[in-house]
Length: 181
Image (cartoon, rainbow, N blue to C red):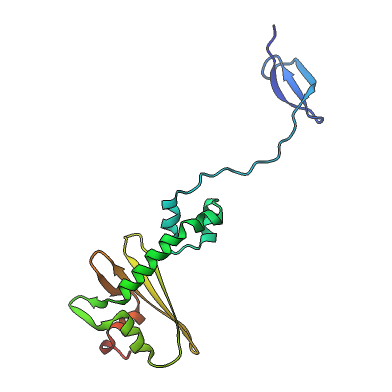
């Protein structure tokens, strides 16, 4: 019995066979056609809940995580609640702390510093916490008023309970005697 090998298809989709790879004898098998299959979507491994939550802690939006990983947005949102609660707790802790810089300590807590810096004027303040690669948290205060949007950021270390200014605006707010406020 002769062994045949598939070497391709003709224009009608019929299989073309040869008795040796590349040999001179070729055969056409008209009853066996190759039917093109619809192109299947690339299968990606779904991210674990820990991977989703790590991205959320870094400040990625659920939609961006879904695009990046191929996960369904609803699946990403399922794991967002605990992270949002954690971020709220980080903000509560950081806002109740004094800012330190070496031997110096701010006159009041972060909340008090922001109230003092803003005075009695009407402001919209948005707080955000994102986890850094080193495990500490970046705490951001964004103030919006008639002059526009301004931000200040601090670094909160929950293990050592230390809060340090990370931006020039945060340093001026934390230690106003150092500059013109």
